[in-house]
Length: 428
Image (tube, rainbow, N blue to C red; front, side, top):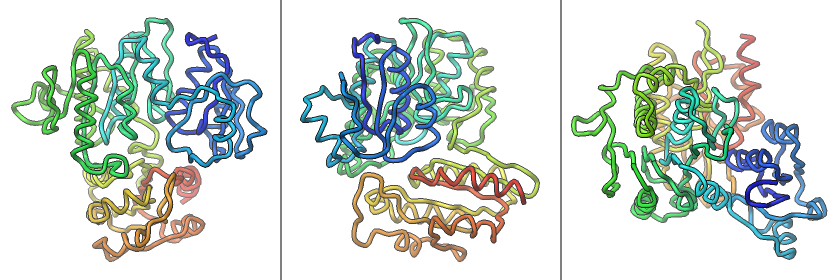
């Protein structure tokens, strides 16, 4: 039996990276966990192997006979037949964010927010605390390589909680942070917020929920009295260049992420020398500048970048780390609204490549928008070597091109190509 007294929890969209971590948590607390997802993936197969019953067909007759609570993600379509069947059964429902919020009320919580960098920073904080002997539970929005999971479980009821705070659908406003990190507020999720100002207001509301310290990257419009600033500027409370951080992962953006993690760890009493030593053994996060192949002839990097600023950060780090190599980018745009809202910015960021291969837009929860296509985006990219490619043609195209340095980017189902590409390139 878990603390909430819930016996059977049913997850709608159990295969999502955040949902699966929560499912693992409830399972660890003694609950019976079952769920639905549209597609079987390596992650859902892991959940099945851990003892959770999952099905992949929208068939109400496959629902468990007894369900005490439903946890759902807003990404699940409202017209799902299982949704209707569950409503008719009058079973209590919670958004994933509400469930996380309930957990955070019971623990001292470090919450990591930001339109970019939050997954890596969350993993950094969790790794530092784990290396330094702090009992903690961590919910991470990606597979942290140091843990091999998106969930790290503490050993006691008093374990500190580290949680990724998602701004989508204002989810992070359900949390109860003692310490929070905000490391970016670039315009995103405008289908939810309408404009950047409403996004900034939501981040300020999140900051006001924080009981102790709000750790904020320089230049962000966060107005609270308990703010601690960090960055490269002379007027920051913590300057990146003063800390002497040694990271095994590249990129100026990761120095900023590490600085935020450093401050959070120091504020709970971990000595600076221990933090710096822990960061030197940080192995990164799967799909975050994830170097899959690195030989003299070929390099393959996979990255979750799905926003123009993330693409820019990734390609800047590649140019710094591999200055002499010709860079081929395979990008799968994610969401029609995001592609529409940032069409010009995507075009500028993608033009940092030498060769661009563009897949069709991954719709996720959305319906197509007239005139918003990968072809429209490709037309705006100022590159000579660029092309559209169907997913079924991607592997043959790469086999023909044999790129010197390949990077795959996107938040859709492009991740299914990572292992096949890695296997193919390892034979070259």
